[in-house]
Image (tube, rainbow over all chains, first blue to last red):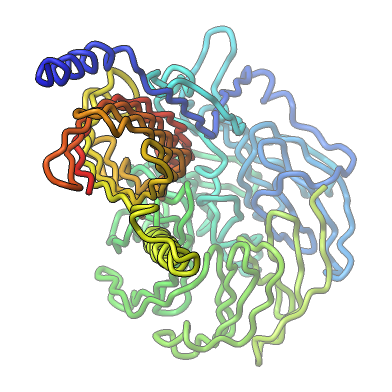
Length: 425
Length: 195
């Protein structure tokens, strides 16, 4: 009787266990990438000057003479009269579809126009937009559609999706095996351009930040995409002549020209190119580091590299690396300093200015490079900062998610204070 | 930290209730024979399920229940335990519950019914790489069994129950943050020693 009862229970449980199913739902919040296409005629014919407009999605900044140029991501360039940094005046907006980068030399603006590289004559004054040369398909398109045109980038949108646990999410998300995000063109988040502003030998070159992908040196324009560096000779009349291409690796992000060398920040290291022959730079050395977003700034015998974390950066470190390039073919790490979320940086007058993302701006005494991280001079918090240009002896320009800030700084002490702010609408 | 807090809370509850039962008995001069304490140690085997996160995997449960018999065929108490709903560490919980039980004292082989209801704390599973977290939730376990005396105050009980357990999991994957909300429905065959 008892055995029968127990046996009955077991049979009963086995019979019914298959009928019980767990209820499982999965809610995923992710970034959906929607491809944005443009017909070649649309982006090639869309270049024009217009009235000033509000800053919405600021990208790279560039300083040329008394002008401040601010990239509006994928749309064009805001132009400000910055002769008085305490009160920059809007001048106008130069529409360049697909634009993310810029550089200016001798009155010619070099900019990307989706897949093309163009030069625009500014000599007759801001307000003119004559395209004097165009290198079509200077940047290879990642995809083309016979009807929609060329894939320019992917627009991001946060999506929340609820599915039963067993159902695959794959066909609900992205159709593309690779994604072109703003971050890929901006050194990880959003950014600016490199090279020191200078005026020598009758040449006037503008100045960008540490996250640039364009660099002007020795009558040549150097441009990086995600894998390659392209070299164009720039003539006095704004003509662009393709000279060479060198494949670096996937994941290169920033370009910084210094002396006879080009420093390329990649997501797993820093590549040094020998630019003795400006028409055909050659790979010289690589300094490897953990996978991270990493703008580079070079001063004297030292390269300063910031590594930071974040979704795009696939990293769990936030640090400033000081790398000796005294032996240029064998770059060696001198010291690493823990930071909070370091982005762009600049070194001038033995002071290092460092953007700390959401944690503001810091200055350090860099007179002893190997101890720079221990010698904090000032930390101004409460705003977002991702790149910086020290535009003159006393002025520096900082970009962040909420706008463009300008600071007066004291070269001797490294102290600084805000003098103006262009706010994002 | 969460696990440690939960265990401490359960221990405090147990000590308090035990103490309260003893003090109350002394205060009212009620002998323990009037409201005898009833201990139950149970081990359960959870049947596999055909769907969900842990499809096809057997589970295990261990519980201890302290009860007080109010009448010959009605008792109540509280208990705590450990339950694994799969072989994965993230699906382990520590349930704590109140129990209402009914027995048939005059029968030689006593049918026994009990109803457990409470909450479960997830084991402190964390994965730093993908920031995974698991959380427990409501726990519900009605069961039907049969008790066989093996001593003066000791009996062995076998039974069959149903377990409902709510849990949620969230983690980062290649897409972004994902939350899974799971209601487990399981049958349980259990073996208990009552004393």
